[in-house]
Image 1 (spheres, rainbow, N blue to C red):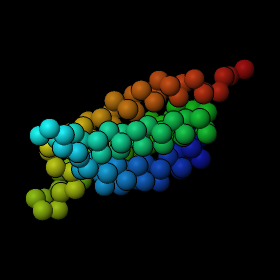
Image 2 (image 1 turned 30 degrees about the vertical axis):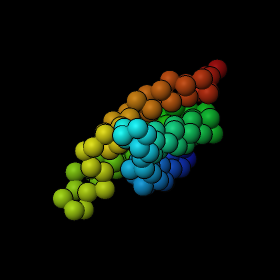
Image 3 (image 1 turned 90 degrees about the vertical axis):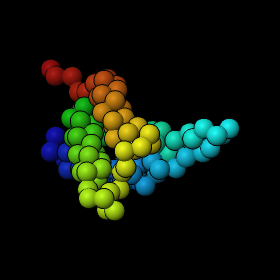
Length: 118
């Protein structure tokens, strides 16, 4: 299982970096801002977590990926003014708090891939 966690940490770093870069993208339709980048970032995270669960046949790498991604996003949202990568707007809140929801959903789904004991 250590191999799954060893892969989950760099996968979480990738998902956190890519999601943080992507979450700020938005589209204005009829004067309403739609944060499609935050939703796309959560879909990316979910795909990475599902891949980890299926590849290692365990929900543990999925949980590790979600925890590391959430810790990184939380840290980046609490940096000093001017250095902050995630601000407290709608897209930032969807990205940071959505990580927990996506991780819980993928954990429930990843249990389907778990190895059965003899």
